[in-house]
Length: 275
Image (cartoon, rainbow, N blue to C red):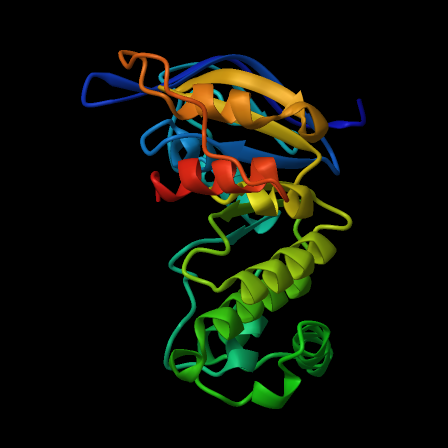
């Protein structure tokens, strides 16, 4: 494996007396593309929060990008880590009243500090870089448009443009194509993969047809534990069926199949029931 970007060992996250995540051992190399799949409440979002220090581990060892998050890391350590982590959420976390260009420039705040960051007076080279990022995602013509006037797909492209400006070492994408139509979802996945050329990419994915666009390795979570950790080529319909089947349920009947694409229909059905 390449240089280790993430290492979890005997990690448990607890809230309100309930274990949300219980991971024995997990290592992710720098530059890997990982998809996280699992039912609602399986621990996917908890895992992403753990990797940014927003969810502390009750016990165990957590190392992310060389930062030791075990115990209570200092505020300085967390700030340093978060400058190296880029995130794309379902809610996008764009500032609606700011333009597309201004939202992309937020990605440079790890480098632009002091009064310039307070009044959004960015150096010329950062503005040029933000414009180049918008061009890369096909939105330069919308640079001056307020974020709340953009379509869902356009807002996701702005979020990816912000990643390009930030240049993070780790990208965490939590259902990055939620509420997008298939064409827009495919385009966003392609742009996200491009943005992660020099980074580790971890995506929470509900639509299995997008897995090949985002991942080489798939980790299935069930009830907070790792059910499987496999190369994408070995993740088949049966493994996904077992992952999403409630523990107490009787074995489910085989999925309906189509002659032209026997796996696509089954996977789409199991995921549509979970969203």
